Length: 115
Length: 452
Image (cartoon, rainbow over all chains, first blue to last red; front, side, top):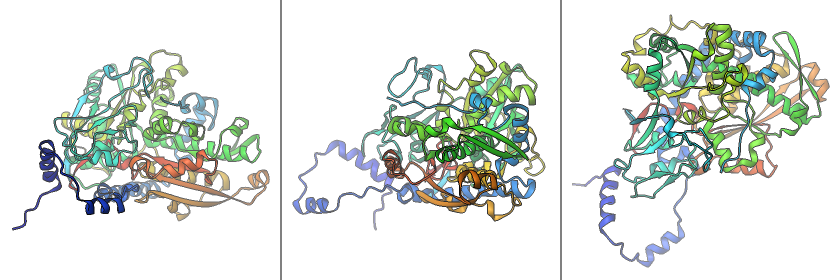
């Protein structure tokens, strides 16, 4: 019978073993193969094990998000921001127009170098 | 594979987590340590380190991990992806419940776009299930007034879209920008915009903003001066909202961001975000008083015995006041959405055209991030006669780039930022979301068991 360890169990076991063992000298042929093939760093999240595991969840939520766009367009004919009736009211009664003095005071900010 | 929804451990937030003076990458008053690795649970599996955009996780395989807070951008990807559920989040649920019980306080719930397509998972529904009307009703039952963060997303687009046009026009030599909106013409002075460089970066994502401030301060002038929707919502609620919509004393308004995001908890604590108080000249009031994650909101509902899925969605979805929002606003929750919403608005302003809401002209598909690390597109926008004359061209080719997650240790974004630093970036507008997929995969969203 094949012994199957999940990644979780494997890590738990190895975690314990690492504490108790000194690592033996690595044979030269293994050293060479390591030198030839440096571990591949995946820079694209979606190609990592975590990214692959999450793809379906991300996709399902994306479908929900675009479905909500469709609802606003079908039911209320509001596709773009300036068509929002309360936006029109907010600018008429209060902020006047984008990049106005009121906008600058409450809707804009600045950033700061850290460290 | 993604498994069932897990409960994330939380610890109670409070002023004791605020740094008292500027220290490392924190400024006085900011919250430090929003995400914490529980050493008793961590097995050193290294998953958190593999997803961290900022290289902020200490400890290698087999070692207990910890977070280097001076590098941490609070995105919460480590927490969301920990296979052992060993990472904890600072929570303000107790404080918000206390405020809801106080008859003298008007608690305003600011609901982010990505909350509505994920909250239902906490109550057993499929990912992507939409709760809008039922979420409003559930929040009202709990005692909240509603301020759709999607309304604030529309505010963001009006400001950020106009800012983008102003930067492009100023670069073309214009000193004044006529803007045609709602059948009227506004003239905006844009001389100051000649010093604001292109490309313009989005500023909605607080983890991205902190990332830029720590690792790429040179590009700060490129970041839109617009606050994020949450930070527009707070002061608008306490100024315009208090006076024109709710007719209440602004001192009694307590604003709560309800976010798919842990970095929003940090953002609300940035010292400059007391603009409502400065505007109405009342000292000591904050723009956003507390932030709950999607998970925190589910916990709040459970404690109050409310299940939003038991409330019918259709008949409760009746927009009014701050519940109005556009299709463009709601896609802020997904990578490419901020950009598409901005392009929809800019397309209307620049061309003067306004096709039917269902027209595919409004679907700027090529900028959607889906599951690509970086997407780029050029959009040809026909110009209205006034701009044709002013800019000396019939069409404007707007070059766009969408960075779908900063990527493992900056993997998606490094080349883009290096090109901007070198003055060689070809784009007009770049969207960045720290989390891959956008806010819908944010660090505050329901956590599913992860089997790797």
